[in-house]
Length: 293
Length: 293
Image (cartoon, rainbow over all chains, first blue to last red; front, side):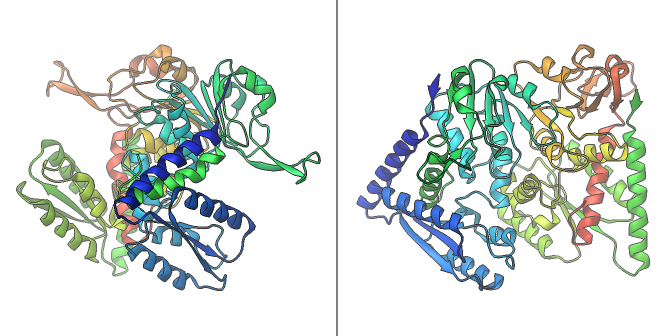
């Protein structure tokens, strides 16, 4: 059994990005610039944005947080996004969700210039990815692909079972795993709440991607010997033994599953740390007016 | 065993559309208008366009074929598409492929106003469909969904195996079958050229969608008793017993498979006849400035 060390891989990826940015700046070019649009106050958003700022600093990006009061109208917000779209010194834009109820989040997402949509949420990027065209792809599934690539885990012809059909993880990782290429070329099965025989499906899997958000869902008797298990779950559960009173819990019963696996990602320290780094990778590509590889 | 009669269902769908158009015209509104953009001369395109014209006439649509010599430049073609985008009396636009080599087909597809993209090939429609938003969806997979709906074939929790991962059939039908809804909520597996155990996969399937383009690929010993088999293959094979010297051959060995099936589509007369009707359905929705249901 080998642990997939997402923290280490994220660190390496950040160093690679930092090196590229440093060369860029030495050549007299401006560094990549990522703008976060934040409306109102949301605890989750604040933590995410703080983490993003720390990462931007670490790799040498310019980072701007554009904060608006939650009284801003949809029209005003769309006008602000239009300004960012047109600003040649803004490379990547992320819209922090949730937005206040009076603002149509889908409309705002679609108002972004898709060349600056480093979160990969614009339908045109979702579609380009599905078609197999260069695109900005969502961070979490891209992070999984990056881990498979860096650990040189074979995927061609493997049976991959994706648990969950969300727009930000399940569906895009299924698309990425089935595409031609390396990593890719998997036979992909997507399971979800309506699936009758999840255990049987999992037992046939060479690769399991668990993205249901149900703590400890994947048990020892659902995993075949030698499988690769990627755990995307990050549910906060109470834990009185911790100072904070809680801990992050994955979708996989790690302690009991790990010894059956060829490779497994822990929670925390697996998929999670890659996510924010992919945002940096996407922003660097946007700075070069390219799509990420 | 029941044959899914695509010809009959297509006829009914056309009648429904014709009734709506007739009411529209009686109310003093103009009928839907579908424009086909044709560059150069291609035998396949001509046959398709002729069929489209016949269908437009049958349902009461206005139909225009805009023909350009294959010497037209990409820039000129894009300018023509811009005119069609802006023309309030054009509801649906289809670009006949293939285009001459000096024209970037992807660029032309993306130049279409996606509200008029009744073929559902624009990345924004592909993405909207993947996300589960209202969208124009490609005709062939939409036709399959329409057949499942009209025959009230249960799909929820069923294991669906899609053979093929093309952008126009395999990937979109997989997306449609896995979405929440009816038809939908299938556990979907996508198999392709890199899949190791296609036979085993098919034997587990409650629903098989064969879209590989390999005549007679799905054999009797690959289908479980009571399965639903949807055949998307339309390969022309030599047949000296026919006057024309050839016949259309599906991806399923129909004669030997049919008795194991609960439902099966024949070739011809199954999925094929629905395809052009879906284009009509999409154009009617575009006329109403809606997305099709």
